[in-house]
Amino acid sequence: MKKDIIFLLQKIKPKFIFSVFMTIALSVAPLNIPSAVATNWLAGGFEYLSCTDFKFVFARGSGAKVNSERDFIPFKKAVDEVFGGTKYSYSFYELGSRPDGWNGYSYPAPGIGISTWERFETSLGALISGGELHAYGDSVENGSIEASYYWQALKATCPDTKIVFAGYSQGAQVISRTLQQLEPSNLFAALTFGDPKLYLPEGKMELFTRSTPACRNEKISNYRAFVPDCYTYQGILGGYKPYQASDKYSGKLKAYCQWHDVICSSFIDLDNLIYGHASYDEQGTYLRAIQDVYNMLEPGTYSRPAQNLAILFDATDSMRGLLNQFKNEAIRAANKVINLGGKVALYTYGDLDEVEPVKLCDFETCTSENIERYIKGIEVSGGGDTSESLLSASYNVMRELKWEMGANKSIIVLTDAPAHNPDRDGITMDNVVELSKSIDPVNFYILTYEGIASKYKELAERTNGGVYTSNVASAFSDLEDDYLSRTPSAVYESTDMELPIISEISDIALKQASETSLKIDVETDATALIVSIGDYIAGFTEEKSFEVTDLDLEEEIDICVSPVSSNGFRGNSSCISWKPERPKTKSAVSKTIMQTQEGLIEVVIPKAPNTGKALKHE
Image 1 (cartoon, rainbow, N blue to C red):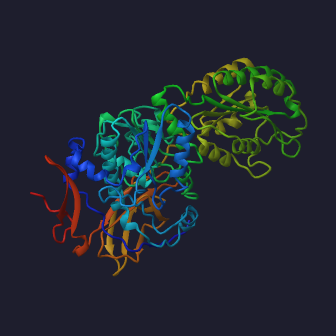
Image 2: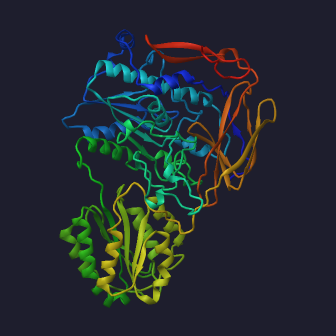
Image 3: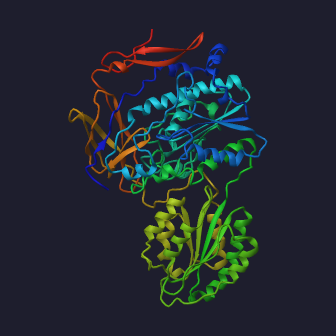
């Protein structure tokens, strides 16, 4: 990690101030637009208001253009895969796609001058060319108002159309903010992916237990659709509290936050900050979400896979007698998983110097018909020394298999010998545990002799598995009771035997360092600090004092700093604002929407001099 990082941020402008009048008006009651007003909205917009059974309204992430291959196109493909060919008609509207917007509001989704994920990734820890950071707050507000206007226009034109709101990253914040203000009767579902304002109270660390309710699978929020990190508490920008603004959204709002997503998750990978947040398509999260929506229509259409089980047989010569005992029990256990709707893979391994690992069948090719043939056909050979190459074999098996999202993932190892650590190809136990966690995790269960059980205790504990050493039949029975009892859940147990250290910021201060830079001093025990504006990461540093340079200090600036502990956990963000002494003329007024007896009207509210705050409207 590089030290003394300078964050180059250019042309930062004030956030658009969202008036208290709009907040009050929209939170008190659903919008009710007179037909005359609705007619004005609809003029020239009929092509965006097709009356299908479902309308999917999508808000893209920061820096993405309309119809982006990064988020909207993969989301659309997931909808097509699930809804295509069914009895339900559907269509799409992407916020910001209508050139003139809705009543002058159009979602721009600005980035920060970084046009591709690749450039974003390489820019971490380096100088960042500013771009449109100042527009993030304006963009979220414009997107939220556009979504509100569009919802009203669609409701007036197509009262029977069911709406599904969805958003990724900045777009997820647009959706979650919109839900804070509306109570639409025809909203069918709202899906957020990687929301920087996600809030899950069950992820808050308890002082006395040093655990969270989510890690015990307790007090789970009903909108938690897929958030595997049980320490996830709030997004990098804090969190809307409550996240589900009204009980009327219960069962409709669904939040998705990938493991290692720095924007919403608590556990991050400083060596690869971007992957978790950029993998919603690759990891099948969009598809999972649309399947969840369809299950609301037709319950049970899409079921989550119960188990993904890989069995690794030590096929060295010393296993000859024990393997024959294991075979029949392994056949029975594998068939039981398949009969319960799960998937099985079979491999053999030994010492890399003598016995290469062999794939007998994987999740796609292992069937009830061929499992018995594969297992009974295993032959032993080699194995001149004591230890074998389990770490290398299991590491490569985990990388090769196509693990299913939502399944409980397990590896059963049948062996009579300890494992090389590090293995002959350099793979260590830490490598295996880290990969296990990154997948979901993969739980390791070791069946072996009493004499070497202690050699596998650490691997089993660090992956939430177990070691079994009694007679063969009872060992398999105990093992099945363990891994088969783990039903699919939106939350899994913590995989760290050592309790996580979640650093916090005790104090943060900002002062002017020059005509164009601000100095930020942070008091924290964190190992590193992530600096963010909006849902983009400006960079990270190990220093507790750093400068943000090349700024326009006549503009309002909001900077968020997140602490990161040595074991990779992100603490709660602290945000600090720089407010200019006197607002610029162009920023002296703020448009907002008010609810009156005559309907919605647009008003202009001047800001109080030298404060940047809106005047109270009399």
